[in-house]
Length: 292
Image (tube, rainbow, N blue to C red; front, top):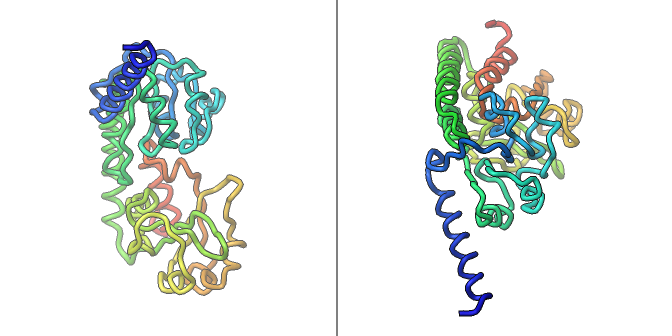
């Protein structure tokens, strides 16, 4: 067997092993002594810091905006457009990524690198947050801390859920607008983190009949009849009330007539991390100020 052929077989075996490990429960991939962690995904980074292990993080992606000290770490790009070379240049001994990180080619290179790689499931449901915390804790060898944090978050989520359910009166219909493109609203339907947070805060998703993020026709916007438009604050694509209600279809809705427009920090609102209960409580207060 030639040296080149042998090397190809070793690389293939390494890639297969890395891919197989990535599909296992994160608790099987403990890197307890990892001191150089690359965190890919704002929520993963936030959880690591919440567990008191931020000093072990050597690089983050552009969505890792909380806590503030995380933004001073070297940046390896946007979570869905990372460079494998950029990650490897940080000489990590553990890579933790939210599911959905990409592109696929970069992720496959990282999985085949021989380094510890853990993918953290991120379903768009608030009920999954405690297990997300446990998964990160297991990956970095801090299961006790993670269990404590997970239980605390679980209690906070139950508290805001109970408050929302106990409220009297009709629910506000909320339209989460991700952006405006070509005169159309890109809105969040069911199976999205925005939908999960709107429901947790005691609101009703005005376009729950669609799934994921989709552009709406003018007719769909008018039919949805939202009471409130909710958007993310900051960023180059920040949507203002003026821009939103310049759209005739939105202007014709109850939200448009009442200029009911709310903004919240994107990671805080949509990250589905340790602060989700606080974000839902803040959104509830914005939606129902009379009930506070």
